[in-house]
Image (cartoon, rainbow, N blue to C red):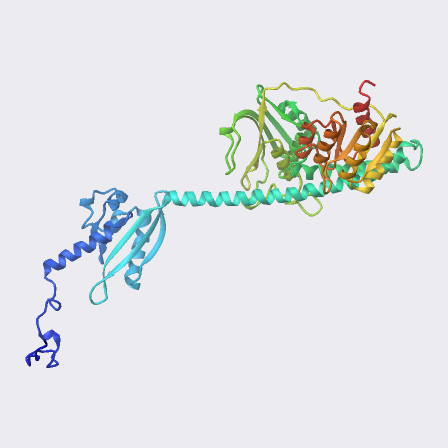
Length: 537
């Protein structure tokens, strides 16, 4: 039951509550205030894994945690009472001083990073305000983030390298496609020229003109070879070979063209062999030599070194390196060198520092592609005014080297029925005429499906199938497999605007009897057909 209020109750008399003593209005004792301060300091300093300092406005340390002692290298009991900046490395003391003043002036936390002693630190300064709103103390935190920074930088580099690899792969695919289509176009031109020359006397006034056209076709094929090299589809026929021998021969040939350049050779006599296509590797060397010569317009030195190395000696640029022995070739010049922005694009196709009309920008790009297609690595080091060094690393082998067998023979007549498969009508027509001119009977197929149907009708009739590798709907690989199912002993000669690499190599490994790259001459075709259909002749 509620009783009447006492008239002496100050709330009823509208007197201020402060007039009545209460536990809620009493100021804490000095002892209580000190205890609260110690608890606050403990929370501020010891609930963080970072080094923490409690500092007064004069910059003296009031309290620290154990991580602060580790950071400064000073025992924890010796830090209180010392000036904060005196405990820091000289190269970071001034930075901290300015940041502390900024925190007191703005009364807001200040975050920053700095380097000291080769390490990177993430720091923050937090002002502690008193009862009147003025800053009375500072809490400083610091954390060594060197490992995190290094990991972040490595991730950034890996991302850049991945993007570069993807870009070069995409451009390589485009370059390979262009080269393939261009070779088909050259095939149609070459075939018609070969047919005209076959029946023409050398004394005919048009004979020289047609020979010049053939030379131009060959130059066009060389250009597409560079594109295919960049696209990693330019490796023709690999075999064991000696790197030193190729370096000597190629450098001697180059030296005769550039008398103003002195070539020094430091070739290791016990160098292991490599498995490579000689022509493609020669192209790599010439591209590197020409690039070096362009960097030395007034002459200079070209230093060539070879040695045996392992995968551990190959500088890693973020990609994985296949373990094993390698042969190293370094090409060093005393030229003008390159700036970092040039080095970053040096292997990009169509990138050149030469004036308009002086270069295609495909030399080093094709060298890059050829080396990669041989499962090798190519790196460059350079500095403006101090020359450049290109390093090529190719897998070593214990297989013995062998001499190249040069093709021989002239267009010769033959007999038999050949199934010709190609989806390019112009190439199909001219190749059929070339085959007929050599004495063979030809059955044409404009697609893979049509080829299978015609072959299934009479598989024993066909002495050989000349099969295009790249066709819509059904490619050469699938057609070859279907033909093998119909007649396991079928002879197939693979023809392509691409080189014998990648998909072509896979088809060859499945039993394809040979490969011929477009554009080919009538003589090339004759020799290849004779080797397959009449090997003992």
